[in-house]
Amino acid sequence: MSLFTNIHRTGLTLLVAAGLLSACKSSGTDDPAPTTPTTPTPPTNPGPPPIPQYGTPFAGVPNRQDAVMYQVNMRAFSQTGNFAGVTARLDSIRDLGVNVLYLMPIYPIGTDSKSVNSPYAVKDYKSVNAEFGSLDDLRALVDGAHQRNMAVMLDWVANHTSWDNPWITQHPDWYQKNAAGAITPVSNNGTTYNDVAQLDFTNAAMRLEMISALKSWVYTANVDGFRFDYADFQPNDFWKQATDTLRNIKSHKLLLLAEGTRAANFSSGFDYNFGFGWYGGIYQVYKNGASAVSNFDALNNSEYNGASGTQQVVRYITNHDVNGSDGTPVTLFGGKEGAMSAFVVTALYKGVPMIYNGQETGMSQAITFPFTSVKVRWGRNPDVKRAYKQLLAARAGSAALRVGTPTPLSTRNVCAFTKTAGSEQAFVVANTRNSPQVYTLPANLANTTWTDALTGNSVTLDTQLALPAYAYLVLKK
Image 1 (cartoon, rainbow, N blue to C red):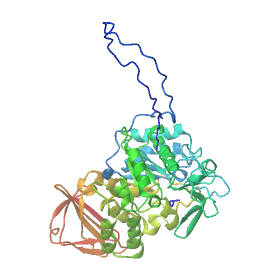
Image 2 (cartoon, rainbow, N blue to C red; image 1 turned 60 degrees about the vertical axis):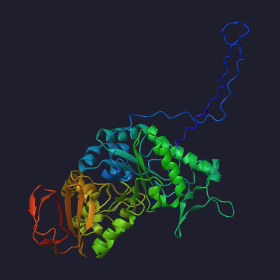
Image 3 (cartoon, rainbow, N blue to C red; image 1 turned 30 degrees about the vertical axis):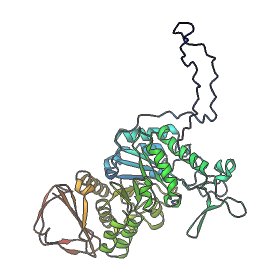
Image 4 (cartoon, one colour; image 1 turned 90 degrees about the horizontal axis):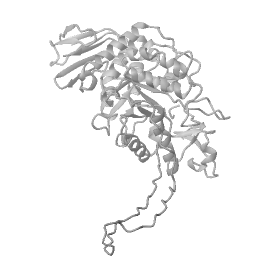
């Protein structure tokens, strides 16, 4: 559900210095005067001991603008539905062109009478869900990813807990309450989620413990960042407190993704906001025939409101939420060809692309909540995986495609843009319709010669492009 610090307060022992040197002039010697020893003051709040670092911090975390993310839903990813099932396929994920794994919540979940078996109802922030394996199994996954030059992010659910989380009884003051004094479930835009209890972010002690738990995973599992669920619904000063604490772990380069759209998330310290608007645009253009101009081009401005430097928006054509509610890209966007055309625009126009597990197999069956009834069937539609590999390799090999500044050139039916990074140029054009389209080239692009970034072939453009249904072209020079 996408509604869904380690603060080590090491007590400082105050040692009262004794033995101030005093010259004893009357004795005629330079020996110090005798002093009376004092007893050190005991620590008043020693706190927990520091958490030892597991493993060696990963030196290969990509710069945030160079990330290609892959969302792993453990329950659906493999027949075994656990960490080991993911570890066994790390080579395949890396072969796709991915450099960041994002694991859906890995913590024990609520099993009380209100539970709906949601991974987003956390029972214990500092433990591993036995459904997926042990801490050692998680570490093996992280180690394996690092060996293949992939970073690992954990999904973090800060907004709420399950009703059988020990905080409920140990710290009821950490939760929001109604007028009668009862802890309240989560409510959003008229929808109430009765399986989870709403935390109170005005409580300083809760915030510190939340951040402590969050920070602990950097040490205990050597992870490289977090995706923060439902991040628009907590105070920005809490997120600033959390991100500042995480950035203070100088041994690690961490990637921090807000599943939110607030411009203030960027100033709160996140590397990324989530492309809710972009998905909506893809849906409207490919599913409902809306204009490519009025949707895509405008989103390149609105979604980056508040971003500075290399801060980015993570963009996708499916994820665990919309896959279950709307359907897969293949069913939504016109079959394998339409889904691929939509991903080309998503991966190359602007931002950081994210792939949901199984997307690269051209799945037509949705993975519905609570993600236990469908398993990804690997090996299907190898042509789809080849197209993903080809596209992501081209993106990785071209600064213009990866991080270039885009110039919009779209029409109603064709998404087109150029991108420039230094002396490199790229030109991308994609037919968003299930029918042939003719695209008239701007004067500065007519009769120019390029290299096809996907095949390496030389391409000389005329004054028009005849594009079959859902066809796309990725050029560079």
